[in-house]
Structure formats: C-alpha cells, structure tokens
Amino acid sequence: MSDLPHSPAADRNKQPIFDALTRILGERGTALEIASGTGQHAAWFAAAMPQWTWQPTDADARMIPALASRVAEAALSNLRAPLLLDVMAPQWPSQGAAFAEEEKFDAIYCANMLHIAPWATCAALMQGAARHLLPGGLLITYGPYFEEEVPPAPSNLAFDEELRARNSAWGIRRLEDVAAEARRAGLALRERHVMPANNLLLVFGF
Ligand SMILES: C[S@@+](CC[C@H](N)C(=O)[O-])C[C@H]1O[C@@H](n2cnc3c(N)ncnc32)[C@H](O)[C@@H]1O
Image (cartoon, rainbow, N blue to C red; front, side, top):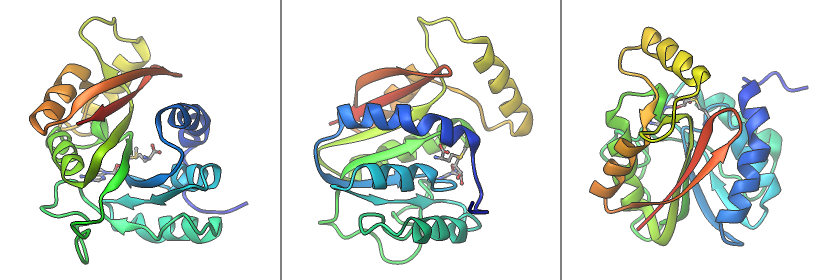
C-alpha cells in the first residue's frame, strides 16, 4: 500500500463523481484539474477514462511532490505530470510557461476547493475557465453548496461552522453566488447533480 497522502473522502466520492462525469463528458478530450490535492481523483479518472488526458494541478507547492509520486505510481500515458496552478495567479499555470493560446481544454474539473479557499478564488476560477476552455468545453465543480430554495443539511451547517472557525475566509458557498460569478465570466450554470453526502456537482458552459 502506498504511503502517499490520502483522503478517505476522495476514496468515497470518486466513483459517484466518475459515474456523473461519464454521463456529462464526451468520449474523449483533455481535462485540466484544479486543486488536485492528493491526486486520487486524477489517478482514478485517468485510469477509468483512457480516452481522456488528465492534467492535475494544485496551488500548494508542498503538494506537488506527492502529487507527482501519485502520477508516477499510476503510470498512465494519459495522466500528465502535475503543475503548480493557483487560480488567483494572473496566468495559468502559475509557474513555468503559460498554457499556449492553442492549448485549451475540453473540461476543467475542480472538486472541493471553493469552500476551502477565499471567496475571490471563485471569480478567479470562473475567469480562468472562460480563458482556458474550448468552445463547447465544460467547467465541472464538486462540493457542498448552500442553495436559496433548499434547506441546508445539518452536516453542511456544522461543516461550514468548522471551516469558518479554521479560517474566516473559508466557508460553504451559495450556489446562486457561484452561478453569478460564472455569469460575470461568460459562463452559465447548465446542470446541477445531487451527489451523496449532501454535495452537488455543477456543470458550467458558455
Ligand atoms: C480539500 S482539498 C481538495 C482536493 C481534491 N480536489 C479532493 O476533492 O479530494 C482543497 C485543495 O484546494 C487547493 N487550493 C486552495 N486554494 C487554491 C487556489 N487558490 N488555487 C488552486 N488550488 C487551491 C489546496 O491546495 C487543496 O489541495
């Protein structure tokens, strides 16, 4: 068993997320993953979707070596070496050469970042996605959200409190606010999928 950093939640949610992705994504393409963390999703999705090339990234330079080890361990030709990418950086990736103008992505995937990062990352994610998605490309976000018309799950209320106690800039975001940031960047909320454990998977497109 590998001693790489490991998220039990990522192990639990990777299959339901994969099931949703297979319904949403086309047969082949290139995906940019934002906030890959341990890289468990990247390795799982790249293995399960050999026609998709997967580019993992994270903003935390301390995560990159473990992420690189996860990619090496997976040994998949469609899983690229990780890049340092902070959504707030003026160019993506935030270190090294920027993605070439012609290198746009069919999908951008970001799980569990918006509530564990300052609110400004939402606008940055939306604007970056609008810059780096191909026409017809999709931004897919996953995580807990609050919604105007849906009573909040007690577990999400408790999680939100815990997040805000850890960092006052963190917290579960309102879906309506996230969709408004998307609209400001030229993207529209196209699909909302209810996921296990009171999470949502959201799909945005031009
Ligand atoms: C809870 S982890 C989620 C990891 C993985 N996506 C998952 O669902 O298991 C949150 C991740 O967001 C990353 N992150 C935080 N701020 C970021 C930013 N400004 N740009 C990109 N990633 C960021 C952190 O480094 C961390 O790896």
